[in-house]
Amino acid sequence: MTTSAVIATRLKPGDLFLLDGQGDDIFKVKKLSTSSPGKHGHAKVRIMYVNFFTGSGGEVTYSGHKEMDKPVIEKERSQVISITPGKTSNDPNVPDVPAELQLMNLESFETYELPCPDGISEADLAVGSEVEVRKFESKKWIEKLI
Image 1 (cartoon, helix red, strand yellow):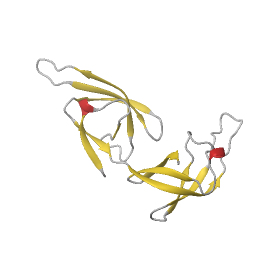
Image 2: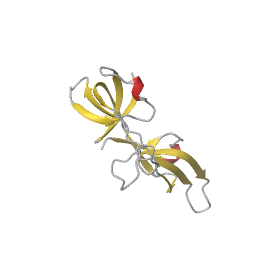
Image 3: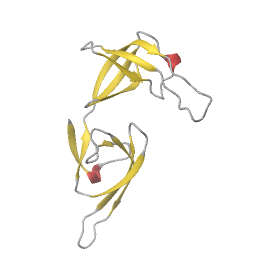
Image 4: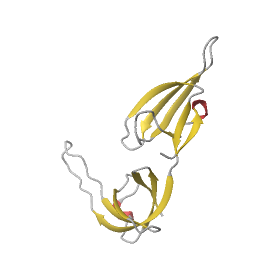
Protein backbone atom coordinates (compact mmCIF):
# COMPACT_ATOMS: atom_id res chain seq x y z
CA MET A 1 0.00 0.00 0.00
CA THR A 2 1.19 3.47 -0.80
CA THR A 3 0.77 5.56 2.34
CA SER A 4 2.39 8.38 4.20
CA ALA A 5 2.59 8.71 7.98
CA VAL A 6 1.14 11.56 10.01
CA ILE A 7 0.92 11.98 13.78
CA ALA A 8 -2.67 11.71 15.07
CA THR A 9 -2.68 15.22 16.58
CA ARG A 10 -1.89 16.70 13.13
CA LEU A 11 -5.04 15.34 11.48
CA LYS A 12 -7.70 17.90 10.53
CA PRO A 13 -11.40 17.55 9.63
CA GLY A 14 -11.65 16.44 6.01
CA ASP A 15 -8.35 14.52 6.03
CA LEU A 16 -8.33 10.97 4.70
CA PHE A 17 -6.73 8.16 6.72
CA LEU A 18 -6.60 4.37 7.03
CA LEU A 19 -7.66 2.32 10.06
CA ASP A 20 -5.66 -0.68 11.20
CA GLY A 21 -7.20 -3.98 10.06
CA GLN A 22 -9.66 -2.39 7.60
CA GLY A 23 -7.81 -3.26 4.39
CA ASP A 24 -7.85 -0.54 1.75
CA ASP A 25 -11.00 1.21 3.00
CA ILE A 26 -10.46 4.95 3.25
CA PHE A 27 -11.95 6.99 6.08
CA LYS A 28 -12.56 10.73 6.27
CA VAL A 29 -12.15 12.71 9.52
CA LYS A 30 -15.52 14.23 10.38
CA LYS A 31 -14.70 15.71 13.78
CA LEU A 32 -11.59 15.68 15.93
CA SER A 33 -11.07 16.44 19.61
CA THR A 34 -7.82 16.37 21.54
CA SER A 35 -7.51 16.02 25.29
CA SER A 36 -4.59 17.58 27.08
CA PRO A 37 -1.97 15.31 28.62
CA GLY A 38 -2.43 14.38 32.27
CA LYS A 39 0.08 14.07 35.04
CA HIS A 40 1.08 10.52 34.08
CA GLY A 41 -0.36 10.11 30.60
CA HIS A 42 -0.26 11.27 27.04
CA ALA A 43 -2.72 13.40 25.10
CA LYS A 44 -5.56 11.45 23.50
CA VAL A 45 -7.13 12.13 20.12
CA ARG A 46 -10.78 11.20 19.57
CA ILE A 47 -11.58 10.86 15.87
CA MET A 48 -15.13 10.72 14.54
CA TYR A 49 -14.97 9.41 10.99
CA VAL A 50 -17.05 8.30 8.03
CA ASN A 51 -16.19 5.59 5.49
CA PHE A 52 -15.38 7.30 2.20
CA PHE A 53 -17.11 4.64 0.08
CA THR A 54 -20.06 3.41 2.16
CA GLY A 55 -20.89 6.46 4.26
CA SER A 56 -20.99 4.48 7.51
CA GLY A 57 -19.36 6.18 10.45
CA GLY A 58 -17.65 5.46 13.72
CA GLU A 59 -15.36 6.76 16.39
CA VAL A 60 -11.89 5.79 17.57
CA THR A 61 -9.52 7.08 20.26
CA TYR A 62 -5.75 6.97 19.91
CA SER A 63 -2.76 8.27 21.80
CA GLY A 64 -1.75 11.68 20.45
CA HIS A 65 1.66 10.51 19.26
CA LYS A 66 0.37 7.50 17.25
CA GLU A 67 1.42 7.52 13.62
CA MET A 68 -1.60 7.28 11.34
CA ASP A 69 -1.45 6.11 7.74
CA LYS A 70 -2.72 8.54 5.11
CA PRO A 71 -3.42 7.11 1.65
CA VAL A 72 -1.46 8.44 -1.31
CA ILE A 73 -4.15 8.83 -3.94
CA GLU A 74 -3.26 8.91 -7.63
CA LYS A 75 -5.11 10.94 -10.28
CA GLU A 76 -5.81 9.88 -13.83
CA ARG A 77 -7.84 11.25 -16.71
CA SER A 78 -10.31 8.98 -18.42
CA GLN A 79 -12.73 9.28 -21.28
CA VAL A 80 -16.33 8.05 -21.22
CA ILE A 81 -16.78 5.29 -23.79
CA SER A 82 -20.35 4.29 -23.03
CA ILE A 83 -23.10 5.00 -20.50
CA THR A 84 -25.55 2.45 -19.11
CA PRO A 85 -28.50 4.45 -17.72
CA GLY A 86 -29.38 4.15 -14.05
CA LYS A 87 -32.71 2.88 -12.78
CA THR A 88 -34.97 4.62 -10.29
CA SER A 89 -37.81 2.96 -8.47
CA ASN A 90 -40.94 4.37 -6.87
CA ASP A 91 -40.85 1.54 -4.34
CA PRO A 92 -38.94 2.67 -1.21
CA ASN A 93 -37.79 -0.93 -0.58
CA VAL A 94 -35.95 -1.10 -3.90
CA PRO A 95 -32.72 0.96 -4.01
CA ASP A 96 -31.92 3.20 -6.97
CA VAL A 97 -29.19 1.94 -9.28
CA PRO A 98 -26.73 4.61 -10.48
CA ALA A 99 -25.64 4.87 -14.10
CA GLU A 100 -22.66 2.71 -15.02
CA LEU A 101 -19.89 4.35 -17.02
CA GLN A 102 -17.39 2.50 -19.17
CA LEU A 103 -14.16 4.50 -19.07
CA MET A 104 -10.82 4.41 -20.86
CA ASN A 105 -7.64 5.69 -19.23
CA LEU A 106 -6.12 8.26 -21.60
CA GLU A 107 -2.52 7.25 -20.84
CA SER A 108 -2.58 3.44 -20.62
CA PHE A 109 -5.78 2.87 -22.71
CA GLU A 110 -7.06 0.48 -20.03
CA THR A 111 -10.87 0.17 -19.98
CA TYR A 112 -12.97 -0.34 -16.85
CA GLU A 113 -16.41 0.42 -15.46
CA LEU A 114 -17.36 2.68 -12.55
CA PRO A 115 -20.71 3.86 -11.17
CA CYS A 116 -21.68 7.47 -11.75
CA PRO A 117 -21.14 9.44 -8.50
CA ASP A 118 -23.92 11.37 -6.77
CA GLY A 119 -22.40 14.76 -7.62
CA ILE A 120 -22.60 14.24 -11.39
CA SER A 121 -25.94 13.91 -13.19
CA GLU A 122 -26.44 11.65 -16.17
CA ALA A 123 -27.53 14.69 -18.23
CA ASP A 124 -24.07 16.25 -17.83
CA LEU A 125 -22.33 13.15 -19.21
CA ALA A 126 -21.86 12.30 -22.86
CA VAL A 127 -19.82 9.74 -24.75
CA GLY A 128 -16.41 11.31 -25.32
CA SER A 129 -16.45 13.55 -22.23
CA GLU A 130 -13.52 13.36 -19.83
CA VAL A 131 -13.56 12.69 -16.09
CA GLU A 132 -10.95 12.79 -13.36
CA VAL A 133 -10.60 9.41 -11.67
CA ARG A 134 -8.88 8.87 -8.33
CA LYS A 135 -7.18 5.58 -7.50
CA PHE A 136 -5.94 3.97 -4.29
CA GLU A 137 -4.77 0.34 -4.43
CA SER A 138 -7.61 -1.61 -6.10
CA LYS A 139 -10.30 1.06 -5.59
CA LYS A 140 -11.17 3.70 -8.16
CA TRP A 141 -13.80 6.44 -8.09
CA ILE A 142 -14.82 9.36 -10.25
CA GLU A 143 -13.89 12.68 -8.66
CA LYS A 144 -15.24 15.22 -11.16
CA LEU A 145 -16.18 15.98 -14.75
CA ILE A 146 -13.44 17.82 -16.67
